[in-house]
Image (cartoon, rainbow, N blue to C red; front, top):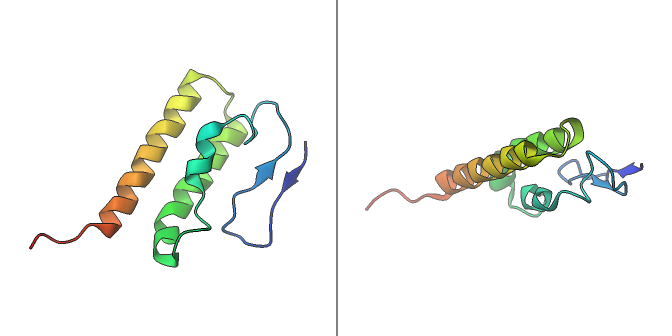
Length: 89
């Protein structure tokens, strides 16, 4: 297995392995990328991306891991929306 990290600390690592714990087999991980976001949204999104990567790297792939990632993604989306929400007029 080879893991590549770019010099940009906000980039998601990419893996070329196709076994347990890699990005290639986990479709949902793409939605945790944050390097393309403006800095104020990166601040909110980055911890969720890091946690998602930790889950993929340390927990065996099974239905419960998928649920964990899906709920983490829902939480990340809610946090970003909370930051972007406009105050009621």
